[in-house]
Amino acid sequence: MSGTPQVVAIVLVAFALIAAVLLTREASMDFASPLRRWLWSRDARRYAARNAFPATLRRSYWNEREYRDDKRRLEALGYRIVSAETSDPYVIPEGWATRGQPPRRRVPMYFVVYEYRADGGRGDETGAGTQ
Image (cartoon, rainbow, N blue to C red; front, side):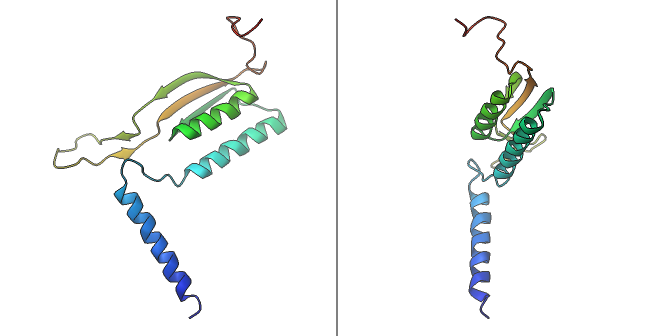
């Protein structure tokens, strides 16, 4: 019975996390964010190590921090934003009959398309930023 206190602690933590997710609709917890950030970071390291960059990258970001960090990482590799769209992070499903508070679904906030520039993105067509 030495494992019983640990099992109880794990069950209590699981219930607390479930309660937090269910009770906080506006600030819902995003458990996949660390995984996405790690995968994107790993991809960037691989592109640089192999010196092989995809011509176009399409990314969907669930929060501002993911967008900001990945944008900085990709710009350092020579990618530039070609297209960017933002949306409300919560949507109401279509066909919802208005009875009480409508269910809302969490969706990505930013949809961004990056394009790789062989010159590292430093070639500015307008000449802005050069002296």
